[in-house]
Length: 247
Image 1 (cartoon, rainbow, N blue to C red):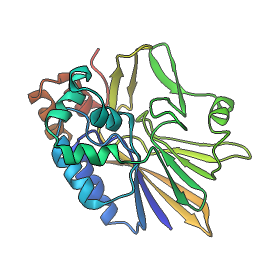
Image 2: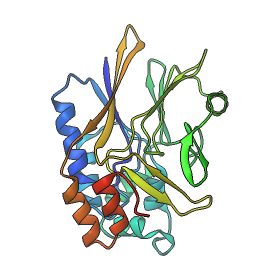
Image 3: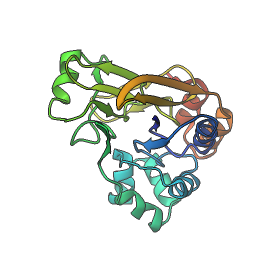
């Protein structure tokens, strides 16, 4: 069995279209989306319409929750942009997404950490940067999760860690946003360093994880950057062009 895992699209339509096309060229049996589908100054309506039509199993990310449940006047500009350009049916779809999914065969998926859609799982914050967390810290964070494979997103940082006598934890990276600055304390930056769309394919043999392929796809990131610029978010534009945040 081959499982495609993706996360953090953030309304980046050309990026998710490139991923969908790439999945279609591979022998993939199932796809799971780890959330944060639409928020951002790009194509939230078109992205949600496409995802709803695809019908992939999807978990609710923190920005999906914000977009579907928070007051618009309390949203950040990227969330408010997406709110203003999506309809009630699309936001209802986000509201009804589950916070976690049991995919069977010991595979559990959620957006960030168990029971918390805003907490990093494989990372810590140090010196204003997102850095890998210590193995024992990750093990403690997943200690109560009964799974052989844990799928997580949120950080946008591709990662894989095998916990001794525990699960393998996999982050596929972000389809649509390769760098960001989180303004909430503690303020921090993540930069993957390239504009590619990221996702992963997991291969299972006899019910066991046999391989993980971390994929980075070229796509028309300049079109996405220009869209962000047009919509008043040049920091997004810079990130989409480069994989870094402007100084």
